[in-house]
Length: 139
Length: 412
Image (cartoon, rainbow over all chains, first blue to last red; front, side):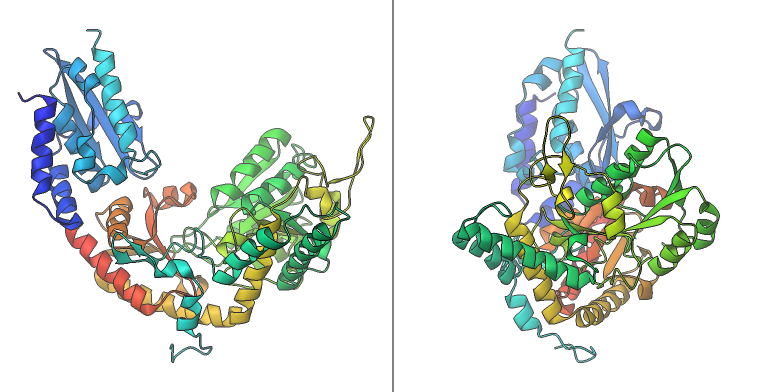
């Protein structure tokens, strides 16, 4: 399994092939379709990350020292964004997730989604993934 | 430009008044279709604010010095312009507020001291949260009962049910003139008549109507009317509460402070007369003055001409959008609507469309539009809302339709 930095570099490489926003968004929409989907029964209030406009559900499982994330959203671009995050963070140790930075999002042109006032709540998604890692770090 | 309009607008001249319309967003010319959230500001209004701060900035109503007199005169002239625009009987029936939300809270706060648990108030199912929450707070304090006029699939109020909600205990009905989420123009004449028949009062939230329709508060016999300047070419942070004199006199003050008193004593303070009783503290002076200039600007173009032209845009955009396919428009009665299209494309989340439209330079609103009860009624998380103003063009609608088509093909 690659470490977080390697996966981030991989994603940056993939996005560097695109020269306009449309191709980037089309790719994000594609990635959204590959998101490991959360089991319907876990789409509960406890697992929801409330953005203003689209809903995101995330569940974290802990297997053999690694955190495994599954998720879903009702908006496809949001799904793409969370698919990118999960590709980076899932199947990693709690410590690696806690210590990871997310600077790569700037490099793939998602910086404008990072402002805390953005409706998609990317910042709260990242925070939530890290919170799960913190919760499992005591195991 | 628009041959079919009864009134002709000089679009080149009008658009040149709005400097922001020249700018680009994400490398594309801005197409601003979020007018129901806030309208853009013409240079004349911007100049009025600059002129105030560079030429006669002073606190009003108190100073004996010349600048204070000049500022006071300008502010009071703006109040008179607003009175005249809405045809209020008295200038002191025009209360400056920070906007519609502030105006509604002001009235709701007053009623929290006037009502008790025997009383009933009625709201409609298609209100903005700002015309729901202040009243819920009022009901919590007083024990008064809150009833709701339901709406139909077409986005219209069920007036037959309204008849059944009204009774001798009804004290106040609060309904918007135009729905912010759907654009529906509500039949306020009928609502006012029915409400007055049981001896209750009516508050009409005019925030979404005022940019399109000139309401005559006397002819309509409106008890309270609220507007926000920023939706009608004025600045943010200014609005107006109109209230009938006898009602405002009976309404307890909202905020205490300077300006709103007649005499302060530690034993007993007496309040100032109207409108000052409701205008504690230094107001948004430049904003009030600029609101007056915004009304002048819109009246010079003419509300009839604006309404005709916006209707033309609405019909044009509605027809084009229906041709995109898989489109559902909420609030379908075009003839009873302001220039707002609230829609979804089947199988696509409104947020996704809004995000992609933004990339193409087009500003629309997406989401629940601070009217969650409407979204719950339709069982949807939100809609895309395109709202037009008199400075928008058919060419912009064409660009919008092309962008919607592109977004649809990317997302489906």
